[in-house]
Length: 126
Image (cartoon, rainbow, N blue to C red; front, top):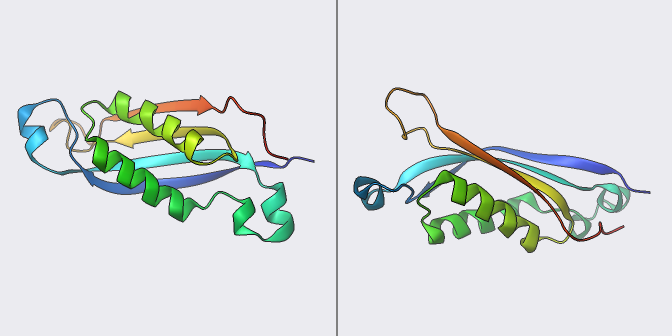
């Protein structure tokens, strides 16, 4: 029996180069990610076994490293690439949504964000 649930990570702060303008390519900015991960909680919940879950601590470390290395120009590219990275990184993930917030994007707005969701093409691990 499957028990599909969600893990949510909110406001993950990442210091990175992001933006298309020359001034943005010279300075590190803080972006914030919200990540929603759907996967089958059943095996992990039944056994209290981290190996049968999605280790969100390790996931956030790996995703942070990926984003910092890529130095994306667009939030759209960051969200699409991040969802693909996470689906490839962990076989238990069935669907993932990444929302990237860039508070320094506009002086006249509190925040600019982009969201992207992607489902796994593989069958769930049962």
